[in-house]
Length: 244
Image 1 (cartoon, rainbow, N blue to C red):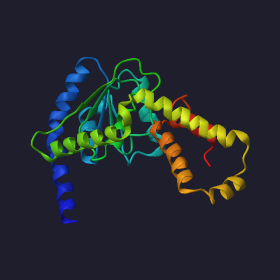
Image 2: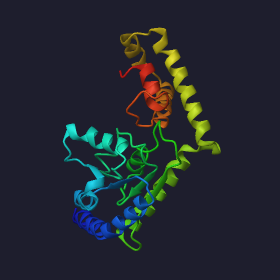
Image 3: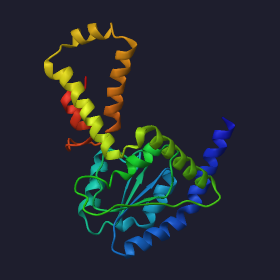
Image 4: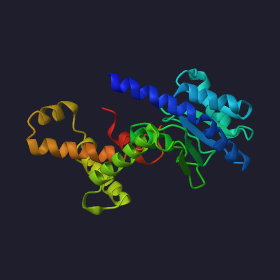
């Protein structure tokens, strides 16, 4: 407990010390006429960045009122005068679309790769016309660099676990979709009732249980955390199965 408390304190100190450099980087970006999406973890960091660019920025953090969340997104998406979107990783990292910019800057990192990837995906949405540039500002020799290395190592492990047989990501996704479709055809589309499925599942062998689990993993592997039915990822399959 003491170690985690101390680490959290250091993490915040590192983040706050980086703010002037983050601001300089943002200024360079918007001088080129580009909009930029900036993610951070600590509220103090988000506020400091937003206050620097207040007239041409919007902010979305955990303390943003529900009615103001979409307003911030809409202003960034449609107002040419708004150049900077400042969002906290957890509050703004999912469920919104930020395709008005093709630049994503991480002022802070998160220990969990999936949280970073979800945040990146805010710019990788339908309507994005440019290649998206993702940048991480890391303070060399600090806890920051340890987090960055840990993320890289975790991603390598995840990729190795997913990449069985050396197959490419597109091939794996297509196979997962096919597997999931076969699973749906085998149950849902035949009108098998819930009670019958419950009765049959109570008699499943270990091999059958593993087969069901493999289909669930197939579904999970194509999940894109989308908030809309966009014809891809988990939502398309989920709509076919039903949330139950």
